[in-house]
Image (cartoon, rainbow over all chains, first blue to last red; front, top):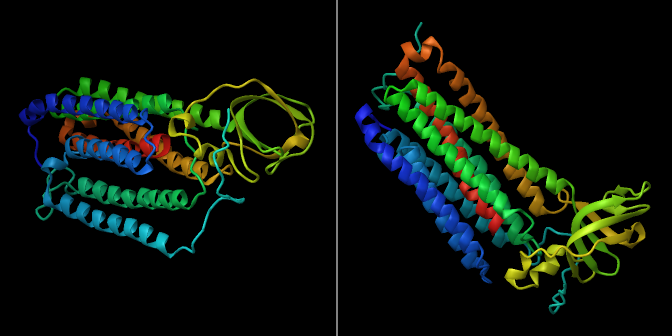
Length: 118
Length: 277
């Protein structure tokens, strides 16, 4: 934090407890949403990562005091975000450059009808 | 010579030096984990099928709660030091370190469970997984092949797959809810000659477990590193240094706390990515 006085810290104690409870609730919601077992992978990923992003915001914003930081820290993080976004862009971009059918596992994978039985 | 800017902020940054240092370090850590997440994405989109339901979600949820709890105790340790309660600060710091121990203890148990859990693919197309209850004295696994003898397996799942397919491939054809249901099937006695492919759930098993152990292993190392730093501060709390140079000690606590929160932050993404998706 930029410059917290004793009184500031005392005032923030309730906020910290609130963030802690919100993180626990967020975790519970994530697991509860997972029990729905969406057929769509895209929906599953979106829901899980959306909640994870909110939780990350709470930790970074309040526990790490990024809500009230100096410009120097924001400048460092902005640079990081830029390079992180670049890395993720390269990841997606490189995916398009792979030859069609590239896989990482051994063995054939023929398109077959459902034969799973228990 | 006194080290400058351990308490007083620099005029240009407005911060004490250690704080700028830890944020630069955390920025490099973001890129480190970012590169591994990037590897995860590439492995996942390139895989025939991605395993589901192989990790214990309740245990993962428990560990998430442990890390979140350690984050609040870390904040409270810093806040109490700031408010002039070093004794209470020490207690919260101790709880934080204990949470770290609990997290690593549970993680060790999880790793052990994976090392004794086997996927077995039979020549008749059956794929199954579970713990080996018994094995004959001459039973041996070399590479992904069983050479001699037999084993008794306590299967969780038994599926019929096509030639060359893995359990993940066969499971991918099931409805989403079925993929996570373990049925605890009857014990199976399997001769080595019936086994086409066998592996425990270690990094060699599949890209999924390779990236799982890499990501969680690196994260566990960070937890361990954080525990060393916080344990040092825990003992330093009692020394004269913390009493005479309170502001400087509090700054150290803040820097250690920032690293600890980052470790929590990484886990917030690791948990859904590896356990739930």
